[in-house]
Image (cartoon, rainbow, N blue to C red):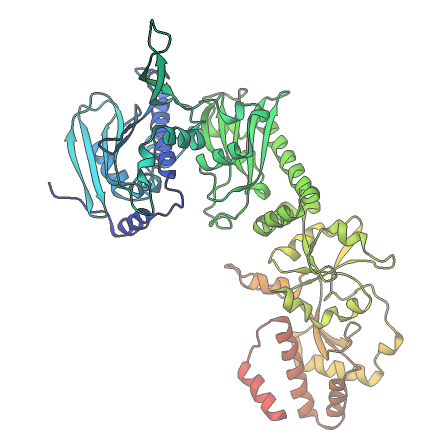
Length: 621
């Protein structure tokens, strides 16, 4: 029979896998056992919907067998098995999810789901194997099939003999090299250690033939070596164990086993609650942002179990959107096993659990901020934007939960600070919490609008995320201190009367406003500029920075900030404007256009006609 070929993209990915995507090759054991557990889960699901099937844990298990002499490692399960078509479909295309296909085929939308995905993980076997053979018989099928591959050259599928349903994965382990000792993966002790490390909480027995020395019957000092089948994993779910029994490594292994992320969790929360509703939960705060976190494809939610049985892979109702980065699981005996997704949304017990979980996460983050600032800042760089989105959404309804968790870069401290820290340093006469928004810290520090606030010795918060200013608009104030942009009309800072322009200057500004027409709402003498000649400020709720952000959105609402052109009347540029206003109207119009475009450039706003701008500069030269 001619070999079938992997698809081109699968072949490239397989090459990467063979050359070790994983730093630790032992990962292949975890991946194959997790897939075997999935196959057993599928059997269990079928027993819930098919009265002709029964489920007994004695009948369903995973077996790991090592044949050192022939360099063969076999991982078998008594699960649902695969047909010829499923072998071709699931194993012929890398990253094809057999579990996902099972879910769709059986229209599992009413709460049930499958733990893992039969995808890239299977191909980790090629890191340690010259040949991978899969012998499988689907539940209820008359015939079994063998899938075999030596790697990127392709694979064969042929009819085979197998008495019972399930799957045997047979690996021909590679010979040792100078860099790698592949013999380890045939050693009983090594295999047991790997299984305990990664798969101890798999809820089906993982069996091995374990060699032990026993005293011969009827003797006192004679021993013999015997091999006995033993279950090497505890099968007790980690969330059912006492916290005192568990180590940080246990929690990290569970995080990895459940494929919650490819990073290490920054923090874990183990909850055991009895009361109005009883439940156990293990929650994780990841260290790094998932690649799709800030996209529409990201799916939030916690795994939901009823008495240890998975009923929903991602229960979105357990997490508010602003804590959607949290991973983990919840198990409650108060939830019905056959509960539907629609009923769950209105389930009183689930709502109580969700409320409790929200409070636990909030308190854990507050504790992290207070007691381990460095770790909290690591979290904040990854997920701080999500907290700010949480404040902005729902018209600020969640601000009381989130506002104390916010961090912003400080002009005074040159690092991230909390709002409490900012307020604690405010002079008595300072009225507002001042902020400046821009693309970067470096750009904000150069903004002319910050001059007068710096001169007063007031601290400025730097907003560099798109959502920052929108979020504080929803906050409005923190502990009775109102937020105020450095570009706002009223800074609440008293200025000297010498800054007030004369009557002729008022005529000059009126003429500039007429030249600029509807591009600005007003032209006025600045009370905020000290050394710079010009800047833009804004009136109304929409700031210039918010206008820039809104203009980049797909459905651009074309909203414009009410811009005010401010002139420093103590600068030489104003003297030139006055001279041109009195003696050369054409030059005055030219200066007005140039100054306005300079103000746009300072703000990072586009100039409507760059060619005209450069020609105007040339005219002056």
